[in-house]
Structure formats: structure tokens, C-alpha cells
Image 1 (tube, rainbow, N blue to C red):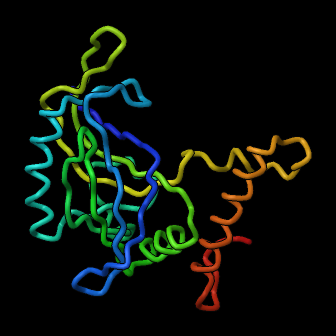
Image 2: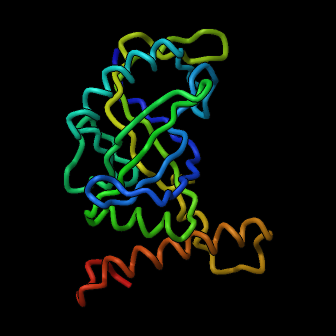
Image 3: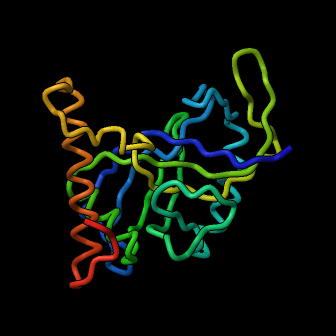
Length: 201
């Protein structure tokens, strides 16, 4: 039976000097890796990704390879939350590389500010498919269908680091705390820049 499959990995975007033909910022990086056991214990064959990339290239040609900001758990891409458009995908070894155009939408502006501030984000493939246990692996089956790649926070629950008692944290935890504090400041500044603030401060 098919279910929603979401796979997230760290994404270290390279903000290039290059702009899209519409003058929008471009970032590049690794979107996914084939032939490995991922963090969810799932395994995607290279042939599966090759097939889905061929199909995905049709969306790229039609400028419909859109993605959202954060963790949507739906088969539908919500246009209200779109942050980017993927312009190109290609192989580098077993890594799937991507060239991403950041859109001037509210979510896109947040993504752009995070990237420009050097924040490490995550990238998450979203697809539908079934799984079959094979030893210690959950193999993704041939009915898999890639929907999109989303930009997500990492870890997926940054609220875990909201403790104000910094003296009880390790140096590594303090760095992580400060990183997500910076993310919250950037998001708040963007959302509240027009004089009204849609979130409680």
C-alpha cells in the first residue's frame, strides 16, 4: 500500500553569484543519495531515482518543479507556501544534485534570508510509495512516485533547544541554541517588516 514518504538530509546550499533568467538567486547542493540506507532506514535503488528524475525533468521544463518551506505532509503542493523552483537536477556519483531558484514569495524570502545568513537547512524529498522489509533495510518499491523537494528546518523539531538555562547546556548545544535563535529572529523580522505582525512576540 502506498504511503507518503518523506526523507530529510542536511543541505549545505552554495549561494552562487549566478542569477536566474528572472534575476532570482540560485543555490546548488545535494538533494538525495541513492544506494544507501538513509536516516529512516529506507533504501532507494539508483534505477528508481533515475526513472523519477526523468519524469521530474518534465516538470522542470514546464517550470512546475516547485517546493515548499518546512514539513508539509500532503500529496498536494500548497502554492501559499511555495519557496523555490528547481531548475536542474543531475547525478554526481550516487548523489542527486540540484540547482534551485529561490522565489520572491513570503516563504521564499524567509529561505533566502536563512541562506544568506549561513544557516544550514535541510532538504526533504516528498513522494508516494510502498515499502518492503529486506533484512535491516526498508526497500522503497517500484511504485514510488517523487512529488517534490522541500526546504526544511533541521532538526525537524528546533523547539527542543528553547531552554533558557544556557549554563546547563554543553558548548555544542549552546551553538545549536544560538543558531535557531538567529533563525527565529530572521523569520520574525521578515514577517513583521510591514508594520503589523501576524505572530505573537
